[in-house]
Length: 446
Image (cartoon, rainbow, N blue to C red):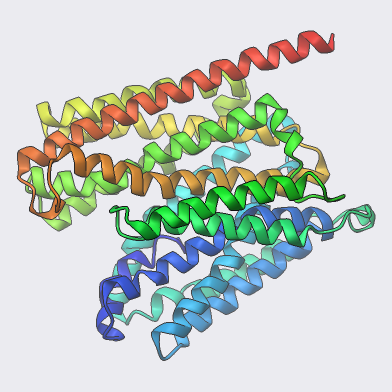
């Protein structure tokens, strides 16, 4: 909810601060950048100093930053406060999933992951609608102040019910990798900015940022190979379960972002629907996610993570190709039918993929691996907003998508989700390769 609720307030903020949209969009961008660049590092820090301790600090930081966001007089402090709020959010996102292994038996890990997926969908769906009500009834400050009582309740519940940190956690002798953290944060910042600045139009600045990303990643890998206690051990990626799961997660998130980027344009411009109807139809996906998440988790526990990953990806492939074909044939009914296939498939994949990684992770690495899972998802979303948006614009044959004809928009929708379907097929191939590699490693171990 903290991610989605601010988007609805951007038009109001442009008026409140007499600022351009490019300036105001940093209210969202600063928050996302903080999460993306720091989520792996805070996950690792939680493993070292204690996950419960750091999670409580993260909730407190998020709550205080939310109050600051609502109280600031000008735009610059609001952007700064949103970055601090993003740091608190990164801590909560990384460590919440890590706590599943501390609080839930392996047999119920899938159900717990499904419940997390449901709550994420509820927050995503609630954000825009609640934000609109708060702005209309009060003012823009209310969309940030609403997090304060929620944060206080979360802090109390976490303090009362989460298990204490093991004493040996702070006595492992491992040190926090500050150099690796800085290099990774700068590298991820360069990539995120390259994908978001220019609003889909790549220029010289975007190219420089991508080159900086490559340089930063090279330095990061070289540094991690030399330090005694690295942020990320590069040999971790030799684990076929981890490497394939992260790759699939990024691909699937890229595809799901296409529904948020392309869907509104198609519904409003090609089908000529009102804003109210577009908003209603765009809420179908999150609502279905909210209802299907818990069911998906139970399916994982019943038939296993590997089978469910394959089943989820097959459903997503069907849903993506259905989005390419059915709306042009059946209009609104075709769009809703395709979303009804795609979204439960995504929940099946998420619950199973998260379970496959987190169920057998060692206690001292749960925060780190959870952070890497969240990072791969965020990178997929960032890439999807840029790449899938560029595919849509190219397929619509228009330099300004807002001026494209309805038929051109429909063509863009069709091509975009054909590409999305191919990408999910790519994720299926990765899943198959992963199963082969796991079998080989087990055979060689025997």
